[in-house]
Amino acid sequence: MIKNISKLTIMAVSVIAFSSCSNSSKDKPADTTITKTETTVTVPAKTENGPQMVEYNAVPDSAILGKTKEALIKVTSASSVDLTDADGKATGSELTLNLQFTNKSTLEAKKYFSVSSSDARLELDNGTSIAGKENSGSNSPEPEASSQAVWSFQLPAGATPKKLNFFLDGTRVSVGLSKK
Image (cartoon, rainbow, N blue to C red; front, side):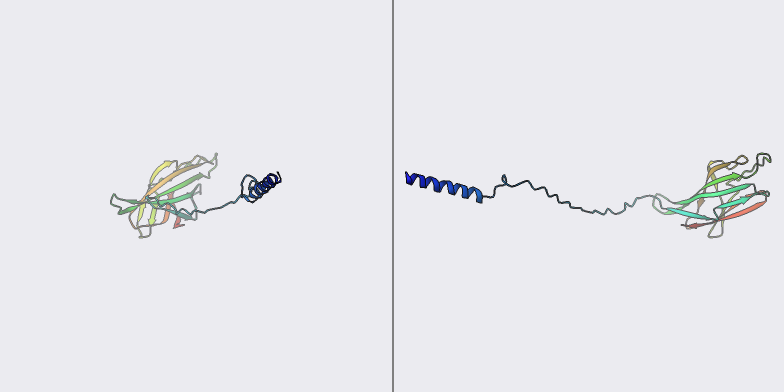
């Protein structure tokens, strides 16, 4: 019996020793450490297969016209789009001007004016002047009011706009255009 008890004791000690030495994941507490990894991916700018746009500054951005200085014209934005044919050859560009017309005359004076895009001249860097066309808006506001208009000019290939000349009532004012 002592033999059996000693065998049993040896077996119990070996089971305890074996279970304490084993690397059981059940007995370990759960790992609560969070590791954060950041990866930065740089995506190159997508080059579109579209026309090239050029923005322009107008200096000065406004012009006062008329014998009694009743017309105020402000260039709010100016940009051009390069035009190409089906083969990709440059055929010129189209300059688009957003303009604000303000009638500075009083309601009592009731002076009206109209500045037509066909009367204005866009002077190019090669010395030629071209007339424009009115796309939308109104260029003849009521007294003490303002209106918006969009004009466009067809530029020949290789030419850039230099200045825009406005004419009204025997007066002429120029607004310079330069690339931004």
